[in-house]
Amino acid sequence: MADIRNNFVGIKSPNPFWLASAPPTDKAYNVIRAFQAGWGGVVWKTLGEEGPPVVNVNGPRYGAIWGADRRLLGLNNIELITDRQLQLNLQEIKQVKKDWPDRALVASIMVPCVEESWKAILPAVEETECDGIELNFGCPHGMSERGMGAAVGQVPEYIEMVARWCKQYTRMPVIVKLTPNITDIRYPARAAKRGGADAVSLINTISSITSVNLDTFSPEPSIDGKGSHGGYCGPAVKPIALNMVAEIARDPETAGLPISGIGGVTTWRDAAEFIALGAGNVQVCTAAMTYGFKIVQEMIAGLENWMDEKGHRTLDDITGRATPNVTDWQYLNLNYVAKARINQDACIKCGRCHIACEDTSHQAITSSVNGVRHFEVMEDECVGCNLCVNVCPVENCISMVPLAAGELDQRTGRPVSPEYANWTTHPNNPMARQAAE
Ligand SMILES: Cc1cc2nc3c(=O)[nH]c(=O)nc-3n(C[C@H](O)[C@H](O)[C@H](O)COP(=O)(O)O)c2cc1C
Ligand code: SF4
Ligand code: SF4
Image (cartoon, rainbow, N blue to C red; front, side, top):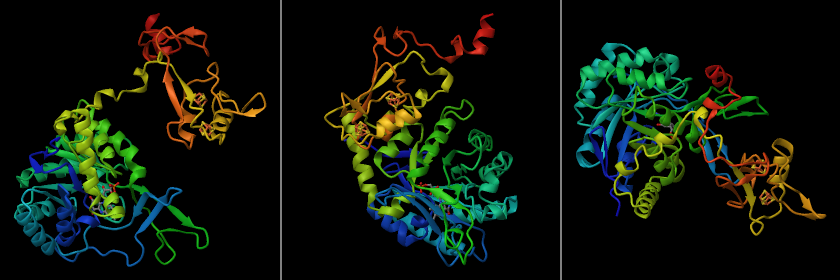
């Protein structure tokens, strides 16, 4: 059986599945139930300064996007950090850590961007004997308007400064949680590293409005007729998160910086993808909020089964395995040729592939042959774009078949070259032409 024990910046947990800082980790009651269900660790709901806690709205906090089967694809929220007293949270953290020593317990923190505020809260958090801290530089709503959360995460200099204070005032590992509401994620990650952070975690939520009520003309969730942007998460954000994780993992300036991958993790496969792209572990919020804590059992079993099947013994065997395969477009092999092929036995003759290819791609799929409804790829027109694969409602009905070296590409009339050749040396590339002259 594969060994999925996790060691993230020295924080040990029985598996790489942590709950992200959010409602599932808001209080001891939840966290204990999560640990009972099998979660390897939690990042406690973000703590704020000592004093009167923040106040949440007293109406709807969530907006959502669903698939046609009403499955939740994207969740939007306007919730703030914890609205419970700091001391109550700290007492609970201390007790839970004492009772569950084998699980990871990290405290998320967000206080004003002044040294005194961080200096004040860090010893109090350290006293709980939790395993580490996560700096919430990601929340894009409410707190950012008060100069915290994403307002800090969008300024690399602030990230570096606060990370440095934290390393100075605590011995606990420091994880910097990044906001995706930024153009190039590498800059805040580099700043975290410069500030001495032990790791980064990402992504926090994406600024969003999920819908507008067309009777009241109010964005949802609506509070007395008005709405404000919220933070988007869930399966819909996974592609954005994966890309950002990969960008940091393959950036020479941050290579080797541990990453906790967050964003849309719902299945073991999602987790394995984050890990393959360089994440040391994953954090989960929306999936637990949608399906409950026991979903972790499927994640654990699925990951173990897959690792057993493939002969991977530990997480180290898979961590970062996909990172070297992420490259810039200009290095893709332009001599690689693939063609779509339709499995006629699986085809239900809906016609989607034809209309997509006919109207928006390369007019390479028939709709009828000899007057009979029939969908077939014309290889001499197919550019191999795979749009048809993605619009076909029948899984695996259309596959992309690579042509072997030497095989004739009917579209170009040329045999497929065995050589790897990319845009940097292509004769149509003006830069390549200039270099050759
Ligand atoms: C209702 C809600 C509240 C959240 N509160 C926090 C928070 O207090 N601190 C924080 O760092 N992230 C917070 N998050 C963001 C999550 O920790 C996580 O980064 C994000 O939801 C992406 O993960 P997911 O796609 O698995 O949900 C919150 C998310 C939701 C849905
Ligand atoms: S791969 Fe693209 S070009 Fe080829 S048949 Fe499909 S949609 Fe048309
Ligand atoms: S979209 Fe798929 S199922 Fe529909 S006609 Fe094309 S190949 Fe057949």
